[in-house]
Image (cartoon, rainbow, N blue to C red; front, side):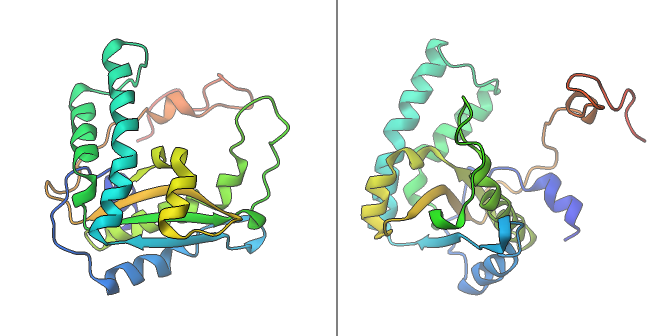
Length: 216
């Protein structure tokens, strides 16, 4: 598959077939993913593939109450997700059926391999993720290239102690994302809705548009 097409159609898959994803497909995806950019080539990312029905159910049992609370807040208007009702409906279906996906891949990272430089700023720290999430995106793109869908969620990171106990994750290793994977039941998106380049790229200073007309 051509790279640009994969990037434009990887999307978030919320409806999965029950067909297992073969180990050789996973191996190929992990093999490609490991070349994601990372600070100092420390290679902090580690993966856990969860196929066992009981473990998937345990993860789903942690996930669903958090999602339902979030969904209730959306319904009450206290949280504005800016998403279409259909998207919220799809996300609810995903949450209700998380235990049935073929596999849940847990993206972990060795904390000693991260070097966040923003921990003293008066805001949430995000820099450490720069050595993690490019590798996660590589994984999703490599799956897309092989016809496998994925859905990345960070909601379960709230329950990291429980997840660590369930999956025997040692001290010094954090959870960065949980990725549901499987063959898509409804195919891949043909067109994803994203903000135009003109709205998100600035020239020299924030808020000064770099592009004033759409590129041909």
